Image (cartoon, rainbow, N blue to C red; front, side, top):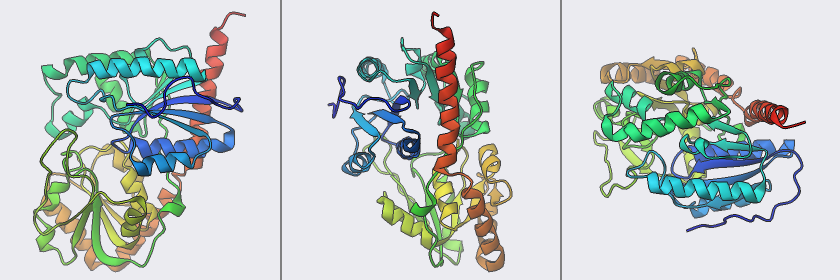
Length: 379
């Protein structure tokens, strides 16, 4: 089912027109909307082709508020889902139709496989995650033969793209490790609007957020310690994996809030004194950025990407050591001065990751792609 397909009625281009792919089942949706909004002052128009599931009513309402966004939606399966290849190929043809209709200056892909399509415009891949890196972080090895086709197609896409970037150096290194070499640009960090996550009067509670079923988020590590802490732990996030019929629950006295609307999520972050994210794998971590903007003290998994982004503004814990996670949380509970100092430091760091900075970095990449393509055209 399509909400909008090819032969788009678009105004004349003012600057660049970007055909961007995205999914609606993860953080890439928020990233795409934030970037589109931040590109508006440059006169950029974004045709956003979404896959994975049709946008929710809330997502459609958000998209409708952006004057420089044209939303085109389908529900084709994503390349990391079970048995996706027929859908992936259909989605590729659909995206090519969109290119023929809207004549973009740049193809901005938030996936990998479709970079191998015969695009007219130059292609940028942004690597937000990948199965091999996820699996290696969680299980210590790459997945077996059933994922060979995924691995092959992802590698072809990365090596075909004109440029590849990622939201952290750590993620870009992982892509080079598993699929390189390819043409890499510098990493471009994600951004969020500070005004969407205002700090409020802090309450004695610990907050966490993420896909409860995702082993990389490692939220179930909190089960073993929640009853031993003086403060309650609340977790927000979906608890049912794509295609699953049974939700994943967390015990140990943890209070699950499920998926929250944007305003409610922001309110919880504003009230929470501590945000805990004991991740084994996290290419960037939008929820961590949102928590820092909201004035939470951060307790994070000790992994390269999170250290790269948050430096000395957080406490880091071994993801597989519940005792260490408990000790870090107890330290912040019992040390209000240290807790407030870390929260203030994290917020100052978070303010550097603005949508304006993100958009400027992408504009530089888009200009590079367009300029290099012009050089290749016949005189």
